[in-house]
Image 1 (cartoon, helix red, strand yellow):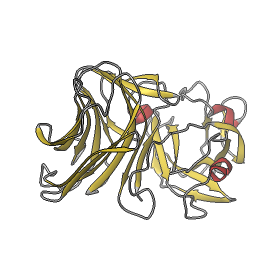
Image 2 (cartoon, one colour; image 1 turned 90 degrees about the horizontal axis):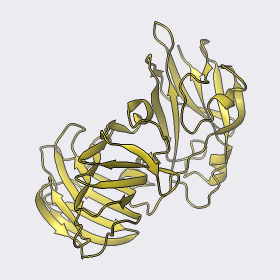
Image 3 (cartoon, one colour; image 1 turned 60 degrees about the horizontal axis):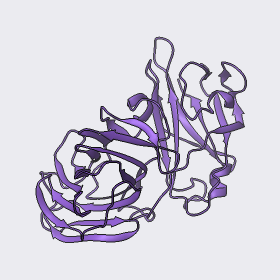
Image 4 (tube, one colour; image 1 turned 90 degrees about the vertical axis):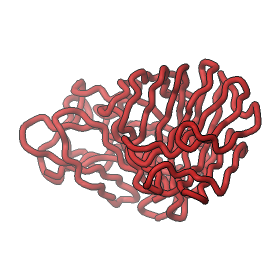
Length: 334
């Protein structure tokens, strides 16, 4: 799989593991929800660093996100690390006085810089970075709004004994920024293995019942208890204790055109009694259920996700109509 992560920051709830733990391992303490480029976004400031969950061990990663500097200061934007709590291989910084983009090994050894004026404050820009970790043939390529502004080859981009990037940090040194519409890829597979360009992450929620309605709603219809853009805990919910029972949901249409690089099914779940409980996320596509791995639930609500970069029924990239027809849901496993 080449698409490792997608994030639209659509929950306007606390920036923590309960709401964003499916994509993020470390949360900047000042993180808040803000008006994003498309829908909601994430604002952070004052030396906070938000770090993704482990991405595996790819030698090359490609990250893209919409990024807006709300105040004009020199800032670290992105960190490329060998582990969530590991060593920083490199960083991307933006210089306020010139509008240049700088690439560093670690955080202080300059590898190269763009021309002046490529990145402005106070407006949304879409930045994409490809980082290849290597002692001698490392690569750093930076694009801003689809235009290549920096291309470095034959670099030492490896700052530890590990020749891979397992985590990306979104950083803010001293001022404030807002970001939105993020993706991360590696170079494996036959799709989504290079720059994807300026992307938009669209949120859709259930609008009706799907093929299965076997869980018990706390009130109303099943789909009405999971149609919240912001999960509301025990205010309303669906519950079940029978192994094999399923719920699936018909969701709102995407309402967009263009290429779909992947979809992500996100659900908040918990168990409400002693003992072990497990659930798996399912995606019903063309009358077939595609089952995820079993998830052992905790006593507190946790956010879980399942990422599909291709339609499991066709094996190729999703179409808009294919996404619109799919039904996400869950099945009781134990």
